[in-house]
Length: 379
Length: 71
Image (cartoon, rainbow over all chains, first blue to last red; front, top):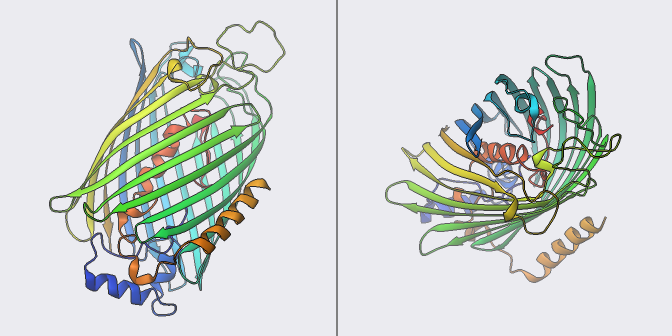
């Protein structure tokens, strides 16, 4: 679920004065059904989009995983009061996973190749300044099946300057293993509350909290002696701020997220992006993201564990580290309705980039390259 | 509960202290680059990548199926 944009997602990229006036008129209650969608942060016209993600990661001296992920997106109003949104993706994963992260191949040296097919469908209904949505999602791999359903409610103020979003989600996962018998389950219930507020003619802010509680199997079935608690409660508080600069017609996006869970993982994430339109339909977007986290209480870089029978994991993702993601995205409007884009980013994790101390400062560094291209067509 | 109280307080604070922006003043806010997620597919992909590489996740919303990569 994405949070709404406070009724601002109404029109073409560079509205003229006439378009702004028209949009303002359309924003008056009851004048146009399409604004009901826009007022809730949904598109007000059909959209078909495609993205292809190529991701490859490595550790010193060795290439690890490669991922290719084409994804298709469709959004279309069905009637004045209902819309459908759907995403379909097929992911192909190959190579060897990072050491200490998932030892499916890391321990044995065996190369893997697997697929993940995922799809979701969302039905959205609009009424007045509010909307309600139901989403179902399914993701299938050789050794993992996930099904989820989400209910979402968005309530907008009459002015369109404030929107409250509430959601609840249930997810059921079936976990098996390739090469040996395993049949485990995990159930997760999540709650979401978010508030979007227009601050001025050029700035908007959003704050939201998410709490998820899962029960069941959390261990890595491919990692020897990996033994994690059978429940996990996760809390995240995200605050976002967008600022428009009239002179350069550019926009700055700033996000900050605080995270904490009952495995004692605690994290801070800052994400900054700057959208700068130039020339004829071009936009360039540099981006910088920093994440730091403190390890889970049962994380260890020592193998085998010094004491058996206690919770234990060497999964790098549960360790203490800092991570930087930096990159650039370039997009071009080919016409009023068609946009193409490409982005290149590099992601690096290092123990010494952590914000605070913790276990395993000798953790191996880890890096990944992200290349994504896509096209979007509005109808 | 504390978070809900904070959100409610923020909401009231925003309603009390901010000059309401009129519909005809939202031309710049309407631009795609001012949306929180101008590219929904990219945002979705980003979250999956970071979620499968880090111990922290969430905050951007809920919904969508899980992934064995997060195990």
